[in-house]
Image (cartoon, rainbow, N blue to C red; front, side):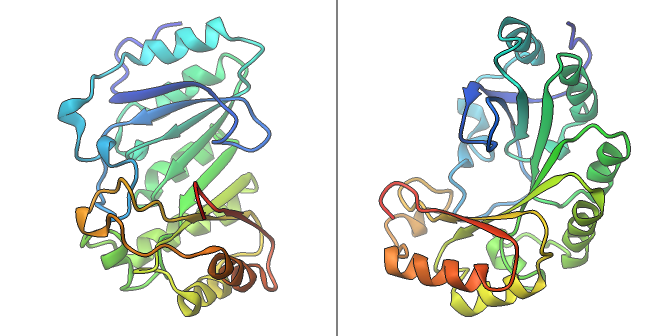
Length: 243
C-alpha cells in the first residue's frame, strides 16, 4: 500500500457511493483540472476552483480501500478530467491490488490514454461524456474549446470495441441539446452500452449566465427519453432534483 511517486492530482474522495456505478458500492476519486470548459458543468470547482480546494494524497485512496476491504467493490476515477493525470495508470493498477473493479469517466479527448488502459485490461467500465453530436457543435458544448470531433469518435470506437461495460452520459441542457439534436445523437450512437440522460441542474454551474435558465419539465424529459430510446439499447433517464 504505497502510492509514493504517483503523480495524480487528487482533489476529492468519496468513501462510498451507490450512485456513481450501478450495482456497485464504489469509492470515487476526483481528479483536479480539465481541458474543457463546459458551460453547464456542475463539477466546475474541480476545473476552475482548484485554488479553493485542498490536495489529497493518493495514498488516502489506498488506505480507504484497505480499511473498507470487502465492502467497497469498485473505484470510479472521474473529475475534472482524470486522463490528464500522468499517474492515472499507476494509481488504477494499485487500486486493483485490493480486488476492486475500476471505472473511468472521461470526456474522451485523450484516446491514447484510454486505449493504453484498455490494452492493459485495467478497466472494467468506461464512461464517456456525449455532449453533443460529434461535429462542430462540440465547440459550444465544450465551452469554446477546440475539440476535434475525430478525436472523440476515436475514443468512442475504443469503447465500442473494448468488450467491457460502457456508458455514455448526456446532460439535457436546452441550449445545447433539443429533440432534433438528441435524435441525431441516438442515430449515431452504438446500440451496446448504457446511455444515461441527465437533467440539467441550473443552480450551480460553471457559466453564471446559465444559472436559473430553462430546464426541461417532466413531459419534455419523457419526450426526449422516447427519442433516445427508439430502436436502441438501454437508456436511463435521471431526472435530477426536481425534474
